Image (cartoon, rainbow, N blue to C red; front, top):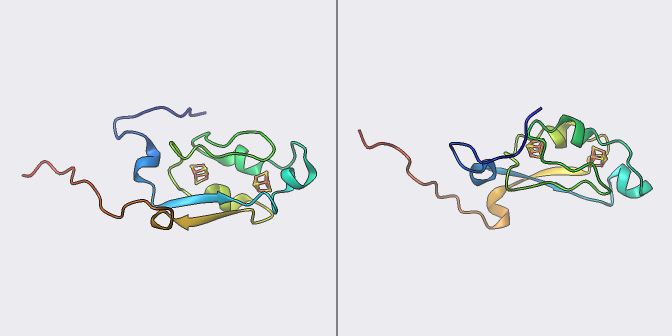
Length: 98
Ligand code: SF4
Ligand code: SF4
């Protein structure tokens, strides 16, 4: 199991290009107000989704892989392009210049 932490490349959320957006109106757990389903929590490889009602996503460390959206049985999670949420499309030049 992995745990969110700052790695050599910084917070993984810094370079995410797609953002998971959870709609509680569609989430099975939120609709039943119980810890149900939790497929997003089970399958998130970065362990950034809480086992709560509704689940929450730590965007500081979510890398935008889209697995949570793919496994959600009720399509409660959609992947949105990051720039729709105000993120810059400019990328810092990390090349060494050689
Ligand atoms: S997988 Fe989808 S329906 Fe299930 S708890 Fe997560 S967001 Fe809700
Ligand atoms: S997009 Fe990937 S890293 Fe982000 S919450 Fe979903 S499964 Fe986890």
